Length: 142
Ligand code: ADP
Ligand code: MG
Image (cartoon, rainbow, N blue to C red; front, side):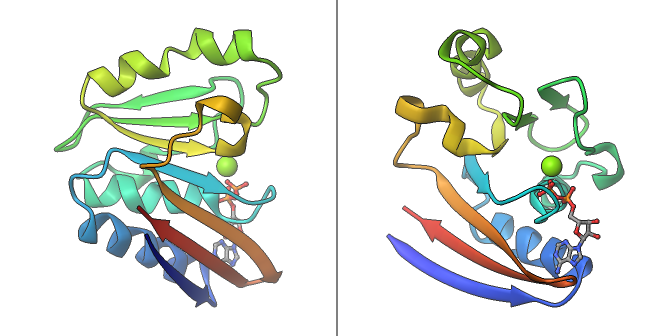
């Protein structure tokens, strides 16, 4: 496992950290994102999506939908936000295994809510708000 830490000073820099991570791991299919509201998880998802040829403008914070499917890129990408997930039954209904079977890229916000479903082979990203425009980003690659 390798661990890297980056500090970004702007939203654009965080986006670029995400693009670079996806570029270094083009075959990776599972990204876990952690961090408080406003930490930059959705922005980070935009960067991963952008590397895979998806318009980052299409990637938004899902207010109602827990899962957004982006099929316009080189790889299919599912953006999953578990913020509103409360129990195992709701988690099971999302059908994450089926998405994996499609060979899609999965990006999961609030991944810690996966509980016993957390996988060791995911790329794990924790974003921490250091100040208004500064984020500390810790990346663990298996
Ligand atoms: P989350 O999905 O974690 O709730 P978002 O990605 O939706 O967070 O929002 C992050 C917010 O923080 C955006 O408004 C963004 O402009 C702002 N921001 C300010 N500085 C940074 C930075 N260095 N990295 C990421 N986002 C930043
Ligand atoms: Mg978000």
